Image (cartoon, rainbow, N blue to C red; front, top):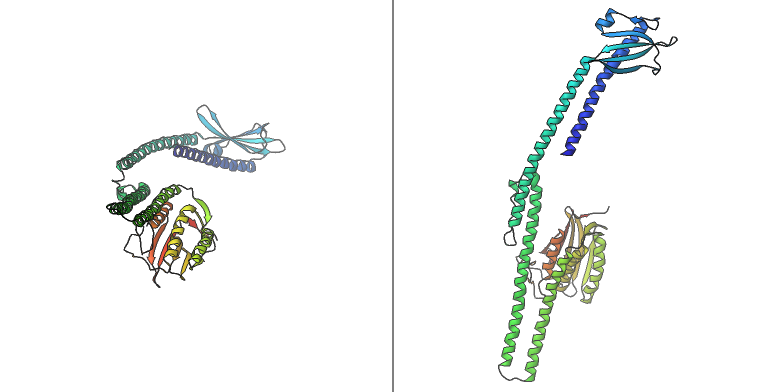
Length: 418
C-alpha cells in the first residue's frame, strides 16, 4: 500500500513538473522569436529606450525596453517573477554587442500560472482520491484475505488423521487456488503416510503374532509328555529359527524409522548418472557372486539434480537386490537410465518370474514369488520416493518374462548438464 502511494506521488510530481516545464519552455521560445524579430526590424536604439508599439503591446501583449547589460547575464536569460498578484515572464536578449545593451521583454502570464495552479489542485485531488481508493482497496483485500485465511485455518484445525478432507478449490478465488492445490497435495501425502503407517502397524502385529503362536503351540505340545532329549533340541532349534526371522522383521521395521529421519536430509546438488555408476559398480560384485550379470546402460552422460542421495540409494538398493534375488542363475539384470520429457527415468530390468500386477506391492508385508523376505523393501522405496517428490512403479516386461522397476525423477527437481 505504501509503495503504491509513493509511486502515485512520484508520478504526479513528475507529471506536474513536465507540464510546467513544457508551458514555460513554449513561452520562452515565443519570446525569443519575438526578440529576434525586434532586433532585425528595430536596430540602432540606445539604452533606456522603450519600444512602444501598438502591435507589440496590444497584439502580442509584451512590453519591450532596451537596457544596459545586466551584470550577471551574458546571454539569453528567461525567468518568471511575481509582482503583486500577477506573474510575468521576463526575457533578457542581447541587442547591441558593441554598446553592451540587452532587450528586456516582459509578458503577463497570470493566466498561465492560474492554469498551472488548477492543474496542481487537480493532481493533488487525484492523489488524495487515489490514496483513499488504495486504502479502501487494501482494507477490502485484507478483509478478504483474512476471511479466507481464517477459513483455511479453521478447516486445517478441524482436521486430524481420521478426518482429512481435501479443500474444494473451485470455490476459491483464482488467487487462492494455487495455495489450495498445495494444501490438497499436502493432505494427500499425509493421507498416504497415515494409510501406510496403519497398514504397517497392523502388518507388524500380524507378522509377529503368527510365529509367536506357532512357538507357543510347539512348546506346549513338547511339554505335554516326557520326550527324548533330541526332540527338545529340535523344538529349541525351531524356536531359534523363528526368533531369527522375527529379529529380521524387527530390523526392517527399524529401518523405516531411520528412513523417516532421512526424509529430513537436506537436498544436495549432484550428478545422478555419476551416482548411479558408483552404486552399480558395487552391485556388480553381488550379482557376480550369484553367477548373474549386471549390465549398465546409462544415458545421458551427465544429469544434474538437487535431491536427497540417501533416499535415492534406498530405492536403487531395493530395486537391484530384488532383481538379483529373482533373476535365475546365469541371467542378466539391466540398470538403465534415459532422459524423458518429464525428467529422468531410471529402470532396473530383471529376468525373474514377473509380478502379479493386481497386487499392491508397495503395501507393507506384501510378498511376490516364493523367495524369502519380510515384505517391507518396496514399502520403504515408495516412502522414499514420496518424500523426495519422485514416482516409482513395477510392471511386467513385454518382451519376455521378468519385471521392470522404474524410478522417475521429475524435471522440477533435475535438469540436464549440456
